[in-house]
Image (tube, rainbow, N blue to C red):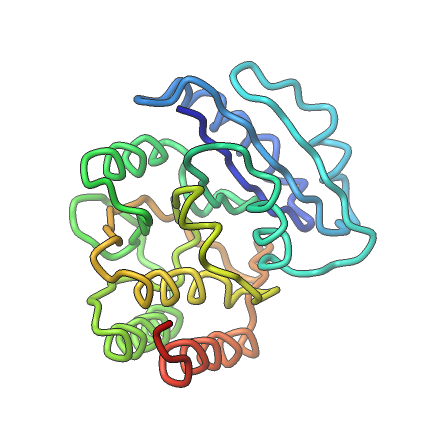
Length: 238
């Protein structure tokens, strides 16, 4: 079985080499015999692209795309899904907030459940995590609860960047969100197609703040709320 890992990167010169090394050390994975990393440099103004190009992977194939302008995480995920050739596709943020040591747990959960989407959760018990900003936690839980109510599926973490999906599901979603709303769009559209095809697993989380390079802003929270309402409330099941 082949795994495609999509990594959107924007100004991550401090973290991207360590991230790629962690992915290398997480391999090989159960059930997986081939891995490709599809890396999208989203017009970074730092040394991210240089570091990516110079990194020599041991255990995966490296495919690099570089945008001439910043298009947003969702844009890169959508195009990465089109390029991906794996049976399973993992979305991996370019920072170090999420730990590649959890990739195997996501894959095992998918194989055991045969679910089309495995959602990482920063709130399920069983993993030690540092404390972080309450307001960020509050609004994420609020948005998660709204989405859960609208599609009648109990999620615990709508906005987690770790999502593992099948190639078959990726072809059905018709994703359109170019920025941070992509996580909400993926999980809500999957629930509309088949709410029994989603499982969640706990993942490690090492939060950053703005000074550390955190990209999401307050305005992005409003956009995510609109995505939830647009696909969860106004979009009927096909």
